[in-house]
Amino acid sequence: MSTGRRYSKKEYGKLNIIKVVITIIIICIAIFCIYKLVNRNKTTDKSEVKELGREIIHEEQKIKEKAKTIDDYVEQYNAVLIDKVKDDTYYISIDGKECTLYSNGNLADGKIPLWNGESKEIKIDKDTKAITINTAEEFKWFADQIISGEKNFKGLDVVLNNNLDLGGRIKDDGTLDGNKWNSIVAILEKVEGSNEENLKGFAGTFDGNNHWIRGMIIESNNNYQGLFGYSNGTIRNLSLVNCYISGNEGVGAFVGLNAGKLDNCRIENVSVNGTTKVGGFVGINMTDSHIENCSTEKDNSTINASGDYAGGIVGYLNNNSDISNCENRSDINGKNYVGGLVGISFFGTEIINSSSIDSKILGEDYVGGLVGYSQSGIDKCFNKSVVAGTSHVGGIAGINYVMGNIGLSYNSGNVDAKDDFVGGIAGLNNATIVSTYNTGEVMSKATEKEVSVGGICGQNLSESAVNNSYNIGKIIGTGYTDGVVGANFGMISNCYYLESSIKAKTNMSKTEEEMKNLKLDDDFKPDSNNTNNGYLVLNWQ
Image 1 (spheres, rainbow, N blue to C red):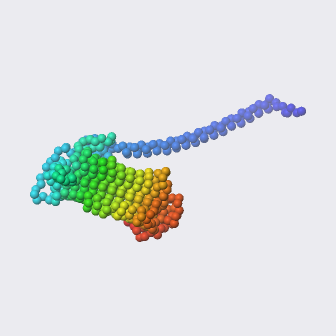
Image 2 (cartoon, rainbow, N blue to C red; image 1 turned 180 degrees about the vertical axis):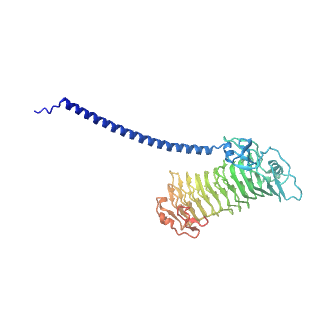
């Protein structure tokens, strides 16, 4: 057996040197690799930290923007702070011009004084046809003449010449502070033998002259509460800002009981609260009354009724009255008969060119994106607000009742119900729906019973009609669910739905391509501006 070759001491020495050199080389390579790996990780970590830092800075910037102080606004306007009037009100000077600055950044020309709670008489000559109000004290005198029953200013033009601050404030915790205002209405003793309320209100023309009234707080348990409790005159060109109004029946920011006209009025950050018949602008609109060109300036106002009839414009809309060119952005809460524009409307009423946008409309029975319970003609209107209730819930109307007509209108807000009769346009139709479309999701959460859910209406009653309309919104429900009408007992013609909106397929279901090339009548046109994802839009859009 061979025992292998034996090495001399000299050869062993050379071999050990080679081993040491190889070991050193291996160690160097390992160190180099570790160095590269560590530096690569450091680079990655730095990059990630840098990105995270950018995100933190971005969030801090957003928080800083949300929490701007008066000093920030003073610097923004390159102004000099003169005086602090109230926690949210400051006088400043910009290039030598005095202004009033509010804590939310709003700016007004001149020093707007807070109402001192007193009144100052306005001299009126016999031949005077116009009265000018310059201060809150003069406005108080004007109000007291009506409240006392002494005057109604019929035939006179009352013009507001300045912005007014009535001094009331809503604190961050919801409590109220400062001066209180009395609704402008005279509630007199009833005539013997009559059950009718004996009211005296404003009967002239009040022109806000595009000014605003801020800080009005009305806390009352009485009926007919608002800036004007009762009016059969005209109120126009006026805004209400940062106001709180509460009452019983017939509560609105501008008028509790309106038998006249509102034109070009605005609300911003206003809270209107009552028991029943509560509206953003008017609580009760009487027969032959008119509201036009009125809107919520921003989406931070709320309308709340503990009972029935709540609307973003009017709570209770009587016969032969109308609403036109109005827009709601207030959140609406009520029990039954709740709408983005109107809680309930009766026959002969018209709602034209009006909308509800980016708000929440919440109630129980008869809840609609525009009208809870409608006998109106609704024309060229739309809803983009969330609508939620228990039953009779619709994107335009909770119920479209006898003599009602919904035409040339659309809904893109989600419609959510706990129970029955749910539709993209109307929960229940007992009249006519023509030339409408829905893109919002329509859903009933009921699982233990069969319910009526449809892209246009949940149920279409006998002698009622749904014509020339389409739906692309998703439909969710158990029972009578369909892309156009959930349960139909009336007439349907020239109506279609996107086949992916619901599992059921009928001769009205169409593919996406077919839906985008529908042949409806001349009330529709192609979506050339891609405002509706390529689906048909109405001619007025």
